[in-house]
Image 1 (cartoon, one colour):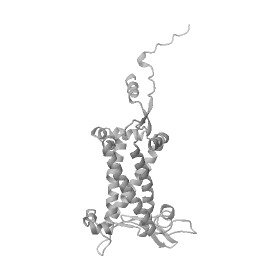
Image 2 (cartoon, helix red, strand yellow):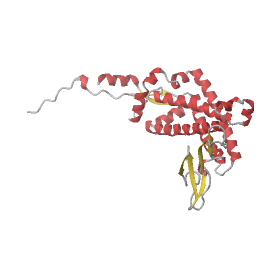
Image 3 (cartoon, one colour):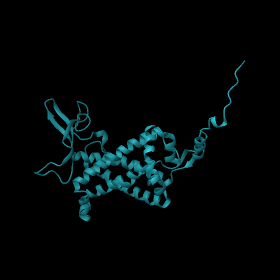
Image 4 (cartoon, helix red, strand yellow):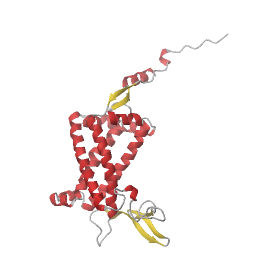
Length: 291
């Protein structure tokens, strides 16, 4: 006699998967400034490395005097028994970096440069051209940041999507755990970790880069002499400028990785057209209640 199929309670039935819908997530001003930043930061990074190559060392305070050495980073070349060796020295600890930093290229065409030709604009050692490129895109970055700030305040984008609220800070730990599990927020608004990282970059790191850049300018030193003193001198401002660049580069690498893991097509469509496919929050709640 065949066994009767067990009855399935309606409460135990599998709930339908949450639906999704296209929402207008990114305003035109946000998309335009995003791509202007991307282009500006690319040229600023590579032209900045060109400028750094002219004097590949960083200091805290003023340059070294007779009493102490305040060098925090130095990239260079030294002679060894086997020939020239590239090195990088950070806070007094020196490691060999031949082929990557200090001395790059193949054995037949090695170059004594802090950063290789592929990492700088122009590729050859040309400080004057590097400064022209750097200053042009630095001013473009300044104006872009100003336009973004004005439009974001006017539209409410800054308060709504960038500045973290108390609820965002309270949920930050859970959001970080979700990111480690490759579970990403796909709602219309940004998640807590997105808000915090964007706020740090847009409202802290980029203004810091602008101010430290101005603090290194002889013209600004004459017009606003206290600006360099705010950072402990021009050399400290240069070190902070370099550190800010490294942090923005780290943010860029993590940002690209997150875009790739979260769904590059959806993320790119959002930043090109403004439209983003978001999960229906109501459907997600119904699914949670039915389980």
